[in-house]
Image (cartoon, rainbow, N blue to C red):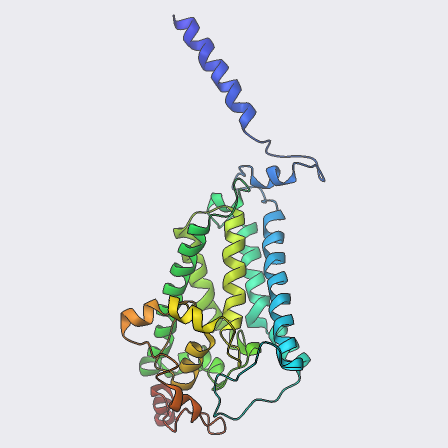
Length: 314
């Protein structure tokens, strides 16, 4: 009986071994995805295939967003209506906007550095290196909700620091708040500190809370980066009315924050602001938003707490 048991274990072990993909395959082998998803020891460099595909996915999404913005700016397609109808319209060259958007070191440059570093140094959960299965859309939703929750908290924290440490706010978040009436290309125009605290820290926390495969991670990253760009649009997006009913953040919601500073700290969703009592719907704030003065740098003639504190300290 003992010998039969041993034989069965050995047989079972050999069967399991056939299910385990090889750890290393020759360069260019058709099993490259299997190689990328295989278990790596902490001393080995992971395959950059998943990282490269993820960055490519975000880049393709950005091309679609930029093309969408181009036809609105150049040809007036999709009935472009300015979010802040009463504010002075920002006249700019489209290609200047593209160069500014893509060339900011605190934008995609820092994001690519973060993605590359966390991936290549094995700082992500092991599941992220797996190509098994497809996109788990429930996990994508979980990631978007958790990311937006942490990002909302960090956003509130940066504004709260105006009372405690004004210099911190000036160095991190204030460079982004010079845009009272933002355009789509201002989405990542701020500071390295702002991107680190409000985007990268929540991203790392989210990754360690939701363990998914690489396809799900790609879908989440592509949606997050590109929708974060779209909510800064100076135009009302065609889907905004429907998204507003679902509690998804819109360009109007985020413009309220840039105009009033003390409302709408969330980006992707309005749920957290509603929970914390800091939500102000664009429809309710329409008159105030329309009265924004771009020249004096404050909304509706009222300075923010941060501006008041800074003026007292100067």
